[in-house]
Length: 468
Image 1 (cartoon, helix red, strand yellow):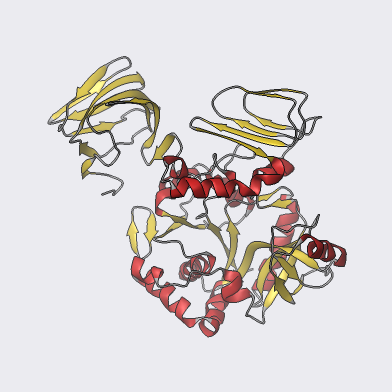
Image 2 (cartoon, rainbow, N blue to C red):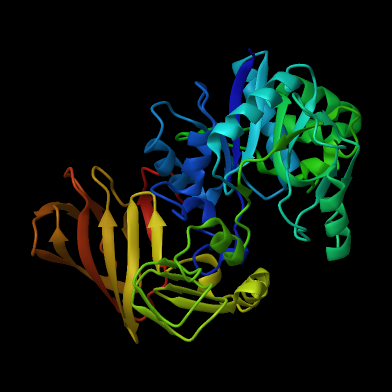
């Protein structure tokens, strides 16, 4: 058997699952099903001895690393994209990295945000795909359709072959409903899943013929990459020169070696709140409730509540998603259009496009629980042995009150140890640093006061996480 290396693409933002999924905290990093995030489920699903290669962006790198450390005994290789360039460049740089590990490397490429409920069937199909990839087939998984779907592209590979799959005849763009119904009745069309298995070396060789500039740009980005803590940081200029193109357009639709393995394993890309409802276990009225929810005479609804009670009366076919700073109410059949709300948020430069009220940092998180003119109150959590940067502020003073845990505070040239219920004042312009020297999370309340309270009023002098 070849050396199978998982490659997980974790750069998406999941805009259709707003307000839970946002640019800096997208859906793959949330626990939407069970006790693991979608990223963690994807890694655990691919049962190989090789640690995975993860491709993500700068903003998500520490959350990705933290989540992987919870489930893996060995360190993954995390490649940071300086800019988004779609799936083809991400897969090529991953293949180049995999070739450094093993001459016979086969990469199994999966988005971080898909749900596959029948993992036994998935494992069987993955074994078939690896076997074919070792024979220099460029393998994709075609999901056996369960209904006429207009939201996916299709793969035509003839009737379902027994055994090792079939060569791809053609790829088809997203159809209208009439055509999708015809595809379903034909039996030879499959949903294009966006999941692949390649021999790393053959993938590179094939693209050298089809798109040599893409390979050259990716090689340059890897050759000039630097190691930053536990991350591989691609060189920006070279990677930016890559075409912004999917692996389907760059390779699969042009190669003569495309092969499809049919997958019938309860797959979903969880691309909308409606699809999340469809994939979830429902009550006797067809409802899916997550959190504190009460309902009277309501059916076929999806409700997620993070922060407070949500009550439904006489509601049908409705999605309600409550977060501390935003509430979505939508007709379930219209949840694909949530992306239009996200577009408005982005155009208006509203913070709800990028961040949740609770913002994650490499050292922990902070939650802005109250704000007014010249003041802001935050609830801060610092992980054990973690430390904020040595910093100062030009425009604000800070009061810290320890709620639980122990805080080691550097204030100017002093070091002060604070226990529960103790506090300290940091005046404007004072150098300071907060550290958790304990073995449990440190929780404290921070009260900021001053003429300007923006996050950009931070002058960093030292930072263990390499932030400027």
